[in-house]
Length: 278
Image (cartoon, rainbow, N blue to C red; front, side, top):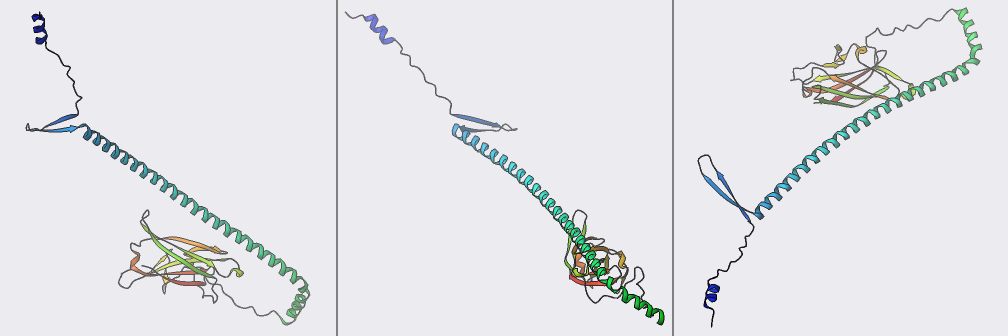
């Protein structure tokens, strides 16, 4: 016989199943405004991962850009320092070369003077005869030669001994002024060292309302500096650069030309050269 109570118990038994819970793969963002409005957004895991990746990439690009910019600035600064250092070294080398040339020319002059002295020794007898003739006939009339007064111009010499080149005029923002530079070159090196004074004179345009100006400042006579000793002094065996500042000049376009005058130590006009400006 069947066991009825046992069968009934078996059929009435509740079979329990294990519930499997899955990991949450989406999140809901609730944005609540001041007036009570609610906005919800569902963010899934792939979207969140993509947002984090984009944020990391953007942050990496920003950091790389900042670091690269700073490196470029540092490199540019170092390059400027190197250029300035090389420029100063080049100027020092030019000065040393100029000094060496001056010493060489002085030595050549001494050698020439010694050679002339050796040649003049056999002529002592002729000088004695000439002195005897002078005693009999009387002294020869002296030639009158009057040097130019200090600061006064002398007539220009016929043969130029210097040339003027490479006039540059530029605006310097640091000092809020115009600067100039030009080169004075000795073209008669056989004649020895050349010394003198140099000026830069700005000629204004007709409708500018400006007046001619000399740098360094000097009175002008017929457009030329009359006090030559107030100019930039130079003493060269080969060449030199003369630099200066154009004071009280607000716009270089008001001037049509720049004339450079170079005078000797005695006031002779060595050269006059015109450059276009503005």
